[in-house]
Image 1: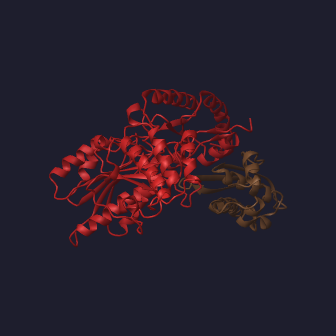
Image 2 (image 1 turned 90 degrees about the vertical axis):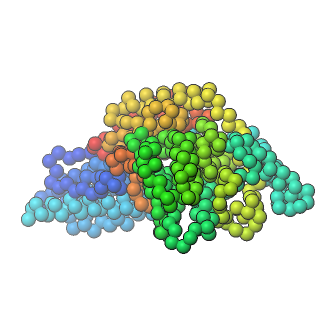
Length: 124
Length: 396
């Protein structure tokens, strides 16, 4: 059902955990679908690049793998670049998610956008 | 370690018993006659079906003519419900209502069939269950109305093992039928119960009863529907005289032979159940040592199957748990519907009052005749580590 890449990110995620005093927090998911995720971001004030990013995800293997992947894709990029990361990018990088799991890729991009939106509101 | 293959998913399907397989073999190759043919080739296979029918009838304590072989238990459930209503419709006056009583925790084969029939204007009452997974008999009595035609209540639940009081339900229906203009028919899906509980139809008081081959160490692709003599029922698949004109199509001879052989091996010995209780107890005690874990479903032995245990773990999602266990060689299942399109968690656990998160965090362990203590020891060693890892990732 899952590609090797999904299982690898699920079994050995590199970005899970919390960040103390994050510059932005983004959330997505709901109890009904069973996936709840939070992204923690540290953003460089001048370059607007994501210096550090971590996730906490209650969810299926695909949701955890997609959380790890979005962190990997977002790290080091500036806010503009990050906003262009699509759920297709996440799915593709994971070696294509099964159709029933595409919503997991949606969910992680949603959480990232939520974090960026909140950050922009804060600094304005 | 990596080559370990531990199967804790007997409620999903059971392995085929070796002796059953050997009985089936000839009918997959050399004994290929069509049972409807009148020559020797046909006689040989039609006799094999007769033998199987005798074996099933013996198990159920019924007549041979009351057994219908189908392609699956889902088909049997559909034939029981739709076939009955189809036949009743021809008897009803125009405008006369049709009413079904079932429960909220039925197998989807019953539940979705009822929901589908609602679209056609048929009224359906879905009985709730308590936290123990059992229906309340007073609720049932209260739902019976003059229009009620069918009560369909599963014998034992596949997700958490609750055993419904089928005999008592049978008596309530018999009592109600005394004062009723038309009869209420009683169907029970006994797929999960067959390995452990008496399925003698006259004791239970059922008119229709569903069984499956592959849950009793028999083959997949074969089910049984018991239809009490005199019960109105119309076929859903037409086109031939097979199975008393209730199920057209050339018979799955090897499957039917396997069904009969598998059912004849069920003896319901108390020792088997005791053995299973010991294994289950070990699992339950071991799992509940994990912090913030809980057992879902009935506690009392008489209200549940001996081989199913359902747990929830706070801060863990069931599908991730099952995938992790699978990576360690243990096959189990979850009520988290993360793989289904609708994404809603188990309707059974929700009906029992679990929160959505609790239902999503569920793990079902179902044991069977090949389960060993060693397998359980291994499972109990790896499970806490997996739960801990997933909790770290979820931060909960």
